[in-house]
Length: 320
Image (tube, rainbow, N blue to C red):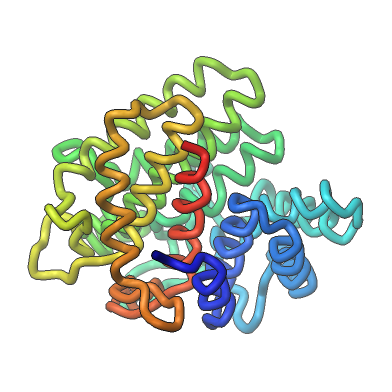
């Protein structure tokens, strides 16, 4: 049996950047721990840069990662009526819509520098789809959110497998990391789930149906690579890479949420249960999920993101 409070404490103890801060806050929102969510959102707002990006601790080079904090800022304002949160959410939205660097067709780049020698800063990273489009959708910018999500399909989607590659350099017209990164595909799944929910809330049935179809097609493509033990290889089609925990938690979260919100069939629950059980077995004495991908180095370790997505999966499982 797992101790979800211990897992939360472990998550909050992990050193976090903009992405990890926002995903931790999102997990607290989805599991109903609004006090902790508000505290995390406050810290993000308190570390706001002049250009509107939030949760800035050192350099200010990430374009999409700050937006991971966006929904928590909006929800914190709803719960507290404190203008600090609304001001931060508005400034972040303004940055994304008006100032963030983007492609000629208007899709935001992931960073405003290159972290890879020999490549340009003009890169698309698949994980950005989770940080930014859902926040824009929730903040009444659904058309722009759909356009941004479409950009990830245009630049990163692999028609042969139905999956997504990791990093593409538009400036050099080549891939930086042409790998079917398991967690990256998990980010697309969960971004889609959040946008399905928001499309339903905003009474956009056509958009909801299209997103539901895309999400479930991606799920089917991912499940072809699920191992018998419920886990995925860090690179989905490469058994030489390690079996990774984050993607399994993400897959479980998508299926459990989809069943609860009626966009995934109950017959898919067996895949979620297998994935969730596999990750549960990897929780150590201190509440850390082992075998997770470190999302700064892309090596095996622990991460706030893995903890957060397990918490999200647990929260949606409880609603089934």
